[in-house]
Length: 193
Image 1 (cartoon, rainbow, N blue to C red):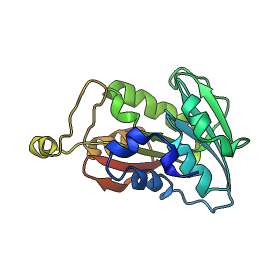
Image 2: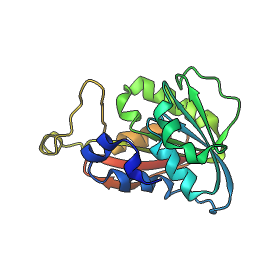
Image 3: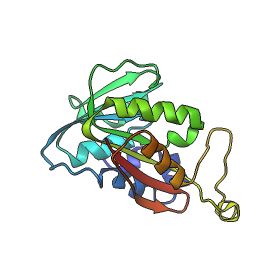
Image 4: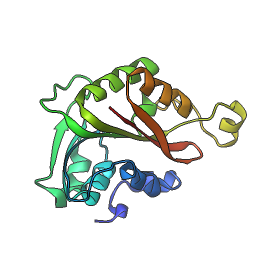
């Protein structure tokens, strides 16, 4: 399967989206054949899960979203390595812990209080030494730069400066956190429990 089979609207509207998604696996220090368990929160079309599945042959991915039909369609070739949960992440009761939790274009849709709640839940779902990796829309501290790049806080999107994301991870008690990729108003960052 190629990326073109995923959500074309996203591909066409976000510059370097494919590159951004490919960077989700960059901080994951696993061997290609390691058995890892991953949770894709707000899986959408399944693009983030796809990156995990193609880069780690023995990875299993649970995809959660309010509606996982698009991800199920796009990830058919990984049947047996994927499970789909149609539910609200915050209220879902998980029965296991994960080596990796990925989140793509979900955090910028949350208000600060919601984001803190999500980060706490994500941390509780990770095994010790587990990774949280996020790819999302962000903004700059400079209002002028945000305006020049047309990075707006609109109805469903609330991008914040990356430094704010790092502060939230530190407050949540993650031991290591850093930024691995950035292009204008988009970034990939990670944390280790």
